[in-house]
Length: 359
Image 1: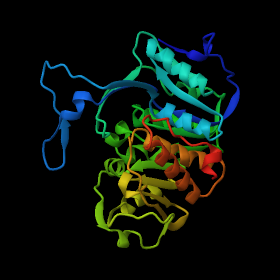
Image 2 (image 1 turned 45 degrees about the horizontal axis):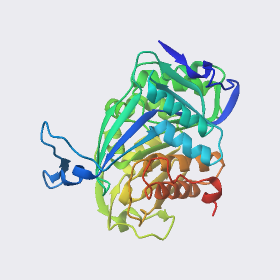
Image 3 (image 1 turned 90 degrees about the vertical axis):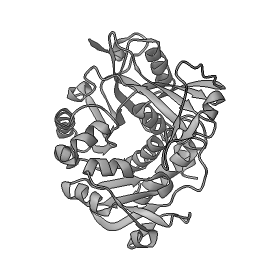
Image 4 (image 1 turned 180 degrees about the vertical axis):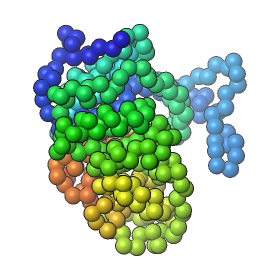
């Protein structure tokens, strides 16, 4: 059984409104265990991988515990609200104390929760994050998969200028049908999509009908490879950056991943623009109506934590697009937002306001 939390006497909003943006995705309670014995439990297990190793039955002492509301929907919605958008969330939560904390935080930020559904008898999504002081982390995650997260899209009163879709577990058939039906009733709306593991397993062709309606697809390099089913090549940066506009003057790596042939498959299907992020590789924007690729080099700032950086980048892009700003500015807003977030612990800390973006 599921119920809409807008019916609660403390969670009451108006149904009949057009949002600047609706964010579909997860709501989680994230608990961080930081430092202490975790610091001394990291071991190199091969040339490329390290792991936290704990003896079975041992008691691990930590230095501090921190809890934050998280999940892609919450992180992106929080940032869009700071950028001045009227924003709502489409998601599910359980029937537990964490649900109350999550909803309280969202309402304190004036984020609309009309379309957040509470699933009776279930726990909310949550993560336990083991984290060293240096930022190394391993995440143990429980995901609430019950409930019909996309049900609000069937309501004719669910209207938005932009629909941001984050990581959700729905299969291609359900996701394509629900979003495309909504898009038919919302012809002027833009769809911005950051797919997740379920979609990557199904592959790009399973989602071609939806991709044909997507304005902006946002992935990192690994996600792009999984979605297309092909690895990228690493080439000298000077070769990759030919016929590419470099947005700022920060230094870039000597070698970069060559995304072009993989991205072209997405553009051929009908995606209007594809953004590929790469952490210390920087980020690229490829457009269907412009042969000039955009590239923004990586931030020179050493991160305190990369938690929430991808969501911050996505929110910057969505926010700039909402205000009708050009592709280069969308990339600048995304990069600036992510750069601030990585300097402060917490996925929603450091998110920039519209005034800060304009400085």
